[in-house]
Image 1 (cartoon, helix red, strand yellow):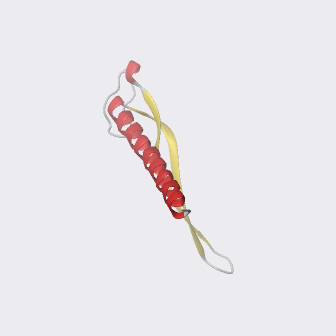
Image 2 (tube, one colour):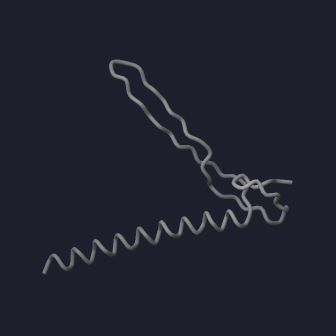
Length: 83
């Protein structure tokens, strides 16, 4: 039976949730006329328990609401600035 990829807890077959979670980072150095550096963050779909899935979903909703708040704030500033 599967284990949670985030916390390691045992998961029953009927409690399996799939979420996109962080799985690693790659640092690259390019050598040529100039030296440049690159970072790559990898995310993959993994099996997680219900508690971890709820915390991931809660974090995603917070980011969405923050985005809406910033957009609304910019619109209000634009309306007040045009008068």
